Length: 145
Image 1 (tube, rainbow, N blue to C red):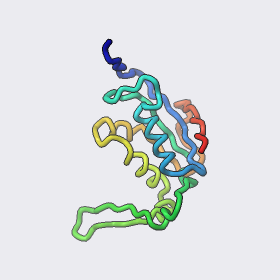
Image 2: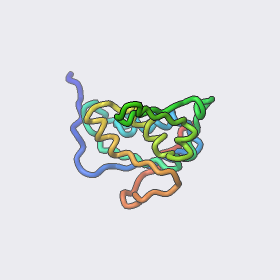
Image 3: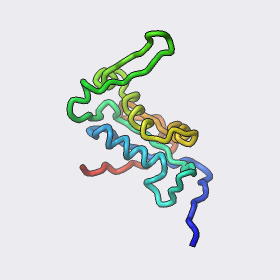
Image 4: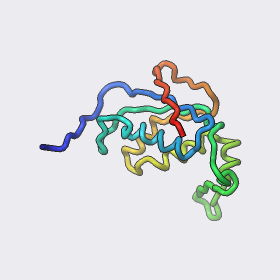
Protein backbone atom coordinates (compact mmCIF):
# COMPACT_ATOMS: atom_id res chain seq x y z
CA UNK A 1 0.00 0.00 0.00
CA UNK A 2 1.41 3.39 -0.99
CA UNK A 3 1.70 6.52 1.09
CA UNK A 4 -1.16 8.97 0.66
CA UNK A 5 -0.08 12.44 -0.46
CA UNK A 6 -2.75 15.12 -0.69
CA UNK A 7 -2.89 17.35 -3.73
CA UNK A 8 -2.49 21.11 -3.36
CA UNK A 9 -5.78 22.86 -2.67
CA UNK A 10 -6.98 25.19 -5.35
CA UNK A 11 -9.26 28.14 -4.88
CA UNK A 12 -9.79 30.53 -2.03
CA UNK A 13 -7.95 30.75 1.26
CA UNK A 14 -9.98 29.65 4.30
CA UNK A 15 -9.55 32.24 7.04
CA UNK A 16 -9.68 31.69 10.79
CA UNK A 17 -9.82 34.22 13.65
CA UNK A 18 -7.80 33.62 16.81
CA UNK A 19 -8.43 35.82 19.85
CA UNK A 20 -5.19 36.36 21.79
CA UNK A 21 -6.82 37.93 24.86
CA UNK A 22 -5.41 36.34 28.00
CA UNK A 23 -3.54 33.59 26.13
CA UNK A 24 0.09 32.69 26.75
CA UNK A 25 2.27 33.83 23.83
CA UNK A 26 4.07 30.53 23.18
CA UNK A 27 0.92 28.42 23.26
CA UNK A 28 -0.85 30.90 21.01
CA UNK A 29 2.04 30.79 18.54
CA UNK A 30 2.04 26.98 18.51
CA UNK A 31 -1.71 26.88 17.75
CA UNK A 32 -1.32 29.50 15.03
CA UNK A 33 1.56 27.62 13.45
CA UNK A 34 -0.47 24.40 13.32
CA UNK A 35 -3.19 26.22 11.36
CA UNK A 36 -0.82 27.99 8.96
CA UNK A 37 1.18 24.84 8.18
CA UNK A 38 -1.99 22.76 7.77
CA UNK A 39 -1.12 20.26 10.52
CA UNK A 40 -4.48 20.94 12.19
CA UNK A 41 -6.32 19.47 9.20
CA UNK A 42 -6.67 15.85 8.06
CA UNK A 43 -5.18 16.34 4.58
CA UNK A 44 -1.78 17.58 5.83
CA UNK A 45 1.16 16.99 3.52
CA UNK A 46 4.53 18.59 4.41
CA UNK A 47 5.43 20.00 0.99
CA UNK A 48 1.96 21.27 0.05
CA UNK A 49 0.56 24.75 0.64
CA UNK A 50 -2.72 24.30 2.51
CA UNK A 51 -4.38 27.64 1.76
CA UNK A 52 -5.22 28.46 5.37
CA UNK A 53 -5.12 32.07 6.60
CA UNK A 54 -5.09 33.31 10.17
CA UNK A 55 -6.23 36.60 11.72
CA UNK A 56 -5.01 37.23 15.27
CA UNK A 57 -6.89 39.91 17.22
CA UNK A 58 -6.24 41.47 20.66
CA UNK A 59 -2.47 41.05 20.34
CA UNK A 60 -1.98 43.73 23.01
CA UNK A 61 -3.64 41.47 25.62
CA UNK A 62 -1.34 38.46 25.19
CA UNK A 63 0.36 37.07 28.33
CA UNK A 64 3.97 36.15 28.98
CA UNK A 65 4.73 33.86 31.91
CA UNK A 66 7.40 34.25 34.56
CA UNK A 67 9.81 37.17 34.23
CA UNK A 68 9.83 37.13 30.43
CA UNK A 69 8.37 40.64 30.14
CA UNK A 70 11.56 42.08 31.60
CA UNK A 71 14.22 39.48 30.76
CA UNK A 72 13.30 38.47 27.19
CA UNK A 73 15.14 40.63 24.67
CA UNK A 74 14.49 40.94 20.94
CA UNK A 75 17.57 41.84 18.89
CA UNK A 76 18.10 42.95 15.32
CA UNK A 77 20.98 44.52 13.44
CA UNK A 78 20.62 47.57 11.23
CA UNK A 79 23.54 46.59 9.01
CA UNK A 80 25.66 49.52 10.09
CA UNK A 81 28.72 49.20 12.37
CA UNK A 82 27.54 49.14 15.98
CA UNK A 83 23.96 48.77 14.78
CA UNK A 84 22.77 46.06 17.17
CA UNK A 85 19.39 47.11 18.54
CA UNK A 86 17.78 45.50 21.59
CA UNK A 87 14.27 45.91 22.94
CA UNK A 88 12.64 44.14 25.89
CA UNK A 89 9.40 42.20 25.55
CA UNK A 90 7.61 44.70 27.81
CA UNK A 91 8.60 47.65 25.61
CA UNK A 92 7.68 45.73 22.46
CA UNK A 93 4.27 44.75 23.88
CA UNK A 94 3.55 48.36 24.84
CA UNK A 95 4.68 49.91 21.54
CA UNK A 96 4.18 47.24 18.83
CA UNK A 97 2.16 44.28 20.17
CA UNK A 98 1.63 42.96 16.64
CA UNK A 99 5.39 42.59 16.24
CA UNK A 100 5.66 40.56 19.48
CA UNK A 101 3.08 38.03 18.28
CA UNK A 102 4.48 38.02 14.73
CA UNK A 103 8.00 37.17 15.96
CA UNK A 104 6.66 34.25 18.00
CA UNK A 105 4.54 32.76 15.21
CA UNK A 106 6.90 33.28 12.27
CA UNK A 107 9.77 31.94 14.37
CA UNK A 108 7.95 28.59 14.51
CA UNK A 109 7.26 28.39 10.77
CA UNK A 110 9.65 26.62 8.38
CA UNK A 111 12.55 28.74 7.11
CA UNK A 112 11.80 28.01 3.45
CA UNK A 113 9.90 29.57 0.57
CA UNK A 114 6.84 27.63 1.73
CA UNK A 115 7.22 29.16 5.20
CA UNK A 116 7.42 32.62 3.63
CA UNK A 117 4.11 31.99 1.84
CA UNK A 118 2.54 30.83 5.10
CA UNK A 119 3.72 33.99 6.87
CA UNK A 120 2.04 36.14 4.21
CA UNK A 121 -1.33 34.67 5.24
CA UNK A 122 -0.89 35.81 8.84
CA UNK A 123 -2.63 39.05 9.81
CA UNK A 124 -2.22 40.45 13.34
CA UNK A 125 -4.13 43.32 14.96
CA UNK A 126 -3.63 44.91 18.39
CA UNK A 127 -7.32 45.58 19.00
CA UNK A 128 -10.52 43.51 18.78
CA UNK A 129 -11.49 44.59 15.25
CA UNK A 130 -10.07 43.66 11.85
CA UNK A 131 -10.87 44.72 8.25
CA UNK A 132 -11.26 41.17 6.88
CA UNK A 133 -15.00 40.67 7.31
CA UNK A 134 -15.40 40.01 3.58
CA UNK A 135 -13.37 36.80 3.86
CA UNK A 136 -15.93 35.38 6.34
CA UNK A 137 -13.35 34.10 8.83
CA UNK A 138 -14.29 31.23 11.13
CA UNK A 139 -13.60 31.76 14.85
CA UNK A 140 -11.17 29.28 16.39
CA UNK A 141 -12.27 27.87 19.73
CA UNK A 142 -10.15 28.79 22.75
CA UNK A 143 -8.06 25.85 23.91
CA UNK A 144 -8.53 24.78 27.51
CA UNK A 145 -5.42 25.09 29.65
